[in-house]
Image 1 (cartoon, rainbow, N blue to C red):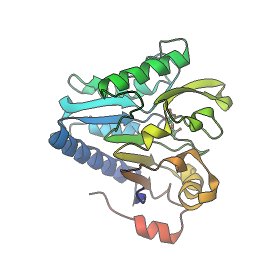
Image 2: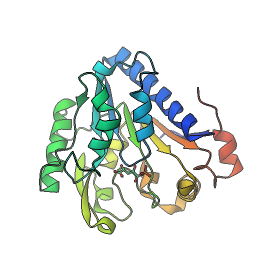
Image 3: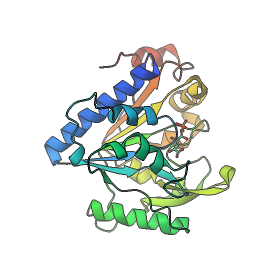
Image 4: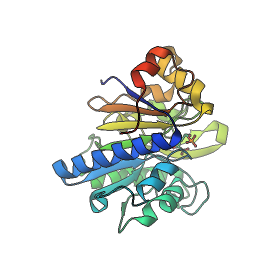
Amino acid sequence: MSQPEIHILNTPDDLFHEAATEFVSLARDAVQSKGKFTVALSGGSTPKSLYTLLASGTIPKIPWDKIYFFFGDERHVPPDHPESNYRMAYEALLSKIPQPHVFRVPTEEKDADAAARAYEQSIRKFFDLKPGEIPRFNLVLLGLGPDGHTASLFPGSSALQEQTRLVVANWVEKFKTYRITITLPVLNHAACDMFLVSGADKATIVHEVLENPQADLPSQKVHPEDGRLVWLLDRAAAGALSPVTTSRGSRSPA
Ligand code: 6PG
């Protein structure tokens, strides 16, 4: 189990440039070695600036035709709904790429569990998995919620116990709705799990997750068995971290 790599960037702009640099270098390496790059996109508001930067054309030679986009989690709303993670990613990035390879959660499916099972099947088919096998994404992008949730693995929710399914419909009591989310076995089988966290409103939870092992939060359960665990934080989100952690993590964008 790898030690978390904690990188603290001065500004949100530096943060997203660092994330874009990591994304592109991982994509190039994977395409060079395996001919394709598989990435699970995160939702919420934070990654939108990364997606916009990747689509901006300012970063040369991104192997778009060899990148396969999946989603780490999705709200159980239609793909054109304002809360749809797919819609956010489509508008900021996927609609600006020539022929993107996109595997989205079929949220048209009224039954959330049926949508989760269908998505699991599309992942199993794409990775050509045998029963019991788990896909190894090259990169899983993750956010951090104020309660310590990541993807749609919320504190106290049933999905946290899942050990065999790749994707489940997870009832989120506080939102009184289902979310469709990849599970911990998938997160912990990835080659790289990368958290992207920005803003002072996340400082307390970042401190809890990275410096309070007793907190027992969902995002603390993300530990790739044989992969990188990367935390990209801007200075504001790192505001409550101890000098030991911040001194270890401070860097300027590559
Ligand atoms: C979602 C996300 C979720 C998100 C966090 C942080 O569908 O909402 O996947 O896990 O990453 O809630 O959200 P913000 O980036 O909006 O703070």
